[in-house]
Image (cartoon, rainbow, N blue to C red; front, side):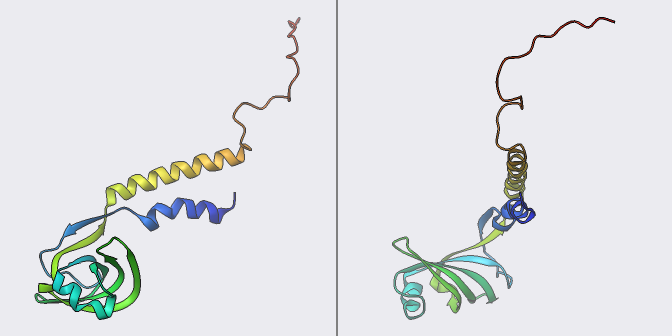
Length: 153
């Protein structure tokens, strides 16, 4: 097996990771990834920017005050469940246009478990490839087992 494939298998859990969302009640710091649930007023106000029926914006906080939030939007979830990707669209929201604000952070425990399982899987895969995919022991390829004769000194 080639090293780049092994490395990609090994680091896949670290790249994807396991995330957890928690409500944000204070002013979120710049650089945090958030999910902003829109009120009906927020949906209506942002129709020209993100399209109709937006229910939630996922993005990176560019700036925040107690009254407003500026996001670099990555994803828009519509009320019917569809997802739109809007890389880099900047949106300013008033807090009154939000029904909920949640921060997305890396869950270290789940990520450690996923990484451990990924490492074990990669080792098993390498071992399987190295052995050529055979389940049993080696052998000579068939036939009968020769009889053993006792040794005499």
